[in-house]
Image 1 (cartoon, rainbow, N blue to C red):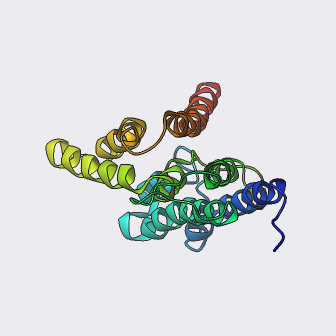
Image 2 (tube, rainbow, N blue to C red):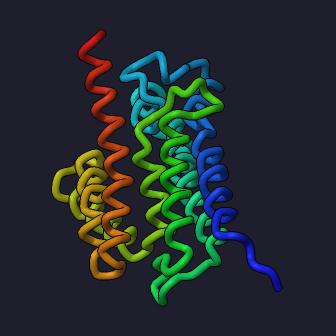
Length: 204
């Protein structure tokens, strides 16, 4: 039985992840109601802007869709790398590079989507969906932290930030430090997108 060259899984992860991430869920959902989220509010084609413009019910498919892009990209990378996981489902061994690459590519696709004029969002939900595959225990703990923070502050936004920013620490008991560093690198992309948005706001 022949095995695929190591480059093939990485190319599958890179291209497939980017194309998945490029699906402009917020633009498609809001567009059906006559709204282009890239032209209203904070001009971010993501869940929060659509929620502010169209309400919770209308924005729910955006939340689910942007998360699903990360989940599907992570699964694609995992399978391309041979589907190696530990007991708790944490991606490991030769599957890790392809899985992390696929999630990163999906985040890049969400931020600069080929199907939407390269005008995308900040990749937070796509990152979260990817972490559900890369390290399920950390993802579950992040959800628990989100819930506790929400109960204490009554703010979903604060809870979401707490959950997302805590993921590398929550990942430490379950994954090697190299994987945690890779997660930090993915989060740097989110920081880059927020920084770009802040600069754009200053110019307007």
